[in-house]
Picture 1 (tube, rainbow, N blue to C red):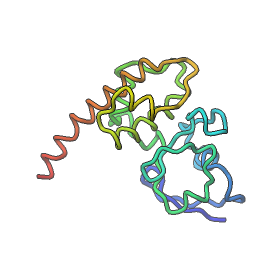
Picture 2: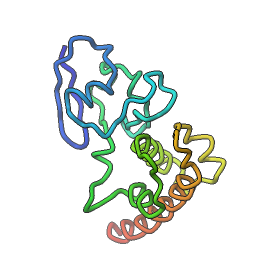
Picture 3: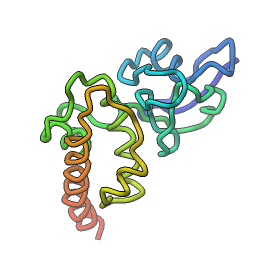
Length: 164
């Protein structure tokens, strides 16, 4: 079966034997995008978080058939070294990662949160960022989420000025 979608701005079609294959394995094993991590396989930890049409989803339990015609974004498509996404920049500034394994999932969940709630409170963060970090860098992540909101706010006015 052929599944077509856009991932990180590129149109892709993959031939897949089982439409129930988790999107995570298509992203990692077929498309060779290794930033999205396998954690628990039960949609509990969030290491596999990526965006489907702007929504943060747990790709370890999301059947690839549901990606048909959708816009996907992985951590590789969020930003890059020369032009990091505000969330990535905040993670760097606040020195968030310890081991770093879970961090792509946290950053993807945070980017989706900031699209919905541009200036989240601590309560908003607690309700929406439910990924798990073995190293317990939650305090630094919270600081980074608030910093990312500040960076987003700095970027938005210049964008509006250019379009006016």
